[in-house]
Image (cartoon, rainbow, N blue to C red; front, side, top):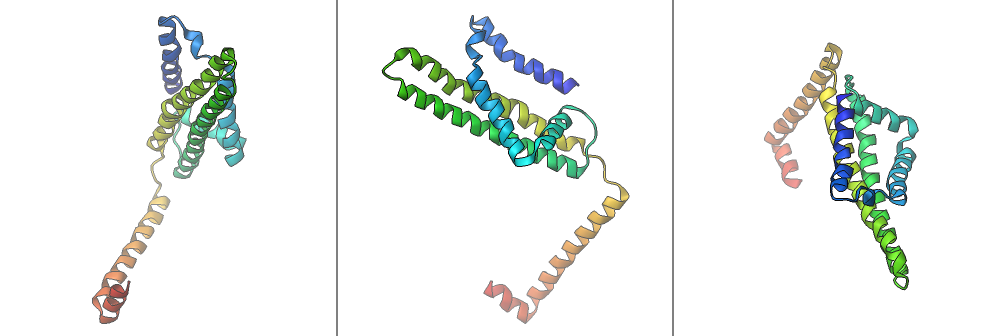
Length: 184
């Protein structure tokens, strides 16, 4: 809950700062929001499905412990969302520039087109880097401690890797192994 409150307060700083300069509504643009938010969510749903997106967002905002597997899954989904936000912002920027260039003869249409170009980029950066990235980065700190069964599997993995390293070292000390190492 504290994360959600901090997130909302942090995001409120941007319109508050604009209001102090006399133009909070200057940064509110519905077409730009639709391009970035709806586009990024749809691309993420296309990659992972709606359930994993909702689960990852909920998991990133609460403080319940996570399994290692759940943490990795949620981080993959949030990274997809982060990348989709950046891509949607870039696409919105290009669409805005195309609209500017297409309306050079009519100056009254240039302002809204520039707003779409600039605001899609602003929304993408704020959401991807100031919201999703910190939420994704905080997930590993909530991984449950390993149980004894998990620990024995990890020890077995370490032992098998250690045995492979010993095998390579022993092999490299023999004349056949030296020839193989030199051949590689």
